[in-house]
Image 1 (cartoon, rainbow, N blue to C red):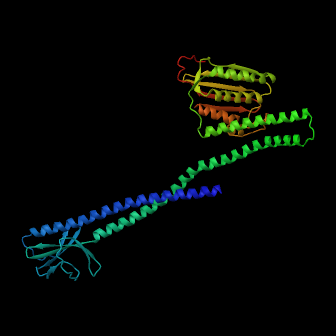
Image 2: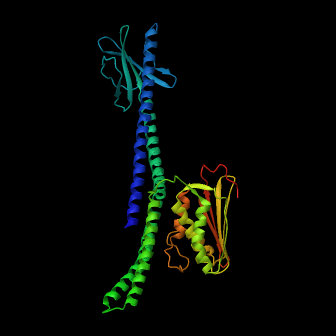
Image 3: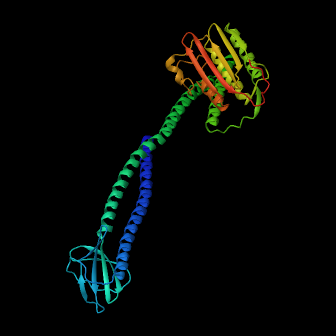
Length: 409
């Protein structure tokens, strides 16, 4: 259904492109055609006026064989005041009635030839001047054909370009729809399992005739643990939804970076010691600060450090930072864990992406949230990893404007 809608929308966009272009081209062509036709008519009329002036200045107005002015063929007809034709240079034998009007008129002879005529008063009668009309009709007919063919070809080209451009315009929509479908499916999968376990425990508790307190307490602990997991998942989804809709307050708080990271390290130190991991920290001076959200930055480093501890069974974890001359802080987190395959690296920041089962039953949103937080702080995050060697995460964040006296670390 969605693909049909996309195809129909693409056709509509293409037709609109072609229709709008056709209307604009028709208006332009009509203007060009009208201007050229009017110019040709004025040229013919000016030629007739010039012949009339020349005739008035002739000393003797005797019959002539015809007149030629450049490439123009002019024919003359001489009438007396009674309207009788005295002589004519027209090859046609037609004798058109004399109309004493000062306006130009267009007539068609029995031979099919069309003439532009003007009747003027001379010394002893009337003079009718005729100019071939094909000097207007032939160029305008050629121009009409050329304009029509040009419009047709241009509309066809615009239609093809419109189809291509509409495809480019619809590509993000299709991609967003596919991402939405995948997101919905993944979220449904993440929610289904804990809800099913909660329902099972509740049903078992209700079905037991007289459950002992120890069994009931275990069931309640499972429900409470799953409820916390669902709460974290809902919080993650809500954060990503707000980030996508840009419904997040602007970053105005000045956050001391080193104390913030040290608080995170202190929180995660217990987990590292429990796995006999060496956690080394080397950060810039405490006065290094940046404009940001304290809670989100804490979440960023908590997610990354927790991931490093989770996937490192032995060895060490190193967290280092330094400030560059370009007023950026670089935070590098390196572990000696199981690493990530090369084929999975392009997808690690996608939501719900998993290249292996999560040992803690996580949702697969940690790195996606980390990237969203870094992007919101106008920074960059890069991850490099090798299986059985370890993973390195580099975070680059711009510093706050008030750090003018910091020492480069």
